Image (cartoon, rainbow, N blue to C red; front, side):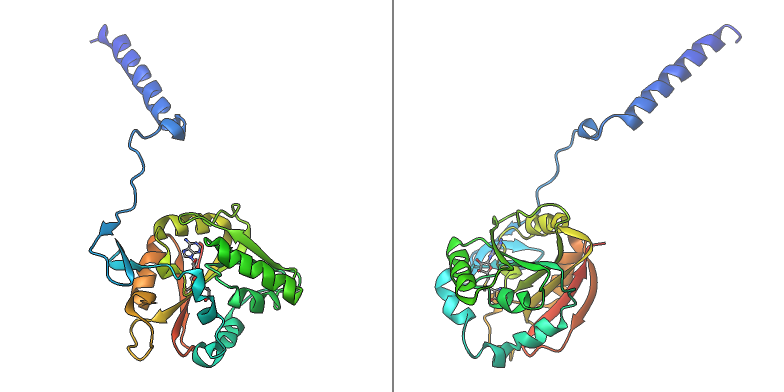
Length: 248
Ligand SMILES: C[S@@+](CC[C@H](N)C(=O)[O-])C[C@H]1O[C@@H](n2cnc3c(N)ncnc32)[C@H](O)[C@@H]1O
């Protein structure tokens, strides 16, 4: 028994050293398992969809730049009340807001007026949209709308560089929603907010094609899975949800 004690101590010592190594070894070699890709599912494409499904929702086709006329239509205020939506955003005058999927900048230019010491970073993946934005900026003499080319899976903004993000009628078109929300989460400052405007799928009187609408439940499922906290859904708009999420 006595003879075996030194052996036992050595075993304990070596075991302890191994446990300590495993506990403290660098994160880069901590797991041999590669990160898993999002579980997107394929389906037969619908006329307005791309045949790719996330959390039960088929992603819609992207509205091309020839649709600028529709985004800038004079009836938009009467139909969607964008000025009411903008009044509902809680932004400090020096805030940096990313308008993701900014399109022609309909919202970007109207919000920029509320940010005399801040700016709107107008992100889009279509260079033609950004060209339109640049021409408008020059025409209007606006200095605080910054066109920014994003990628289909990345907002391409530096970490913790924005106070808030706005997505109007855009998120349902993102063909890499998981990657987009992960990059947006990194770009937002802690407690940064997302303002998500999507046409209400619960309301059949909203005259928009089904793939371009979302339910509150679906949006919450996707944004909560991406690590955002649901704050509220403002019910004031005629056609759209105004969902607010926060980065914890
Ligand atoms: C229907 S338009 C809405 C434009 C604008 N938000 C508005 O309401 O006037 C959607 C825009 O989202 C853009 N878009 C689609 N996928 C995107 C992505 N992954 N990142 C940034 N923009 C994207 C499209 O290029 C298009 O300009």
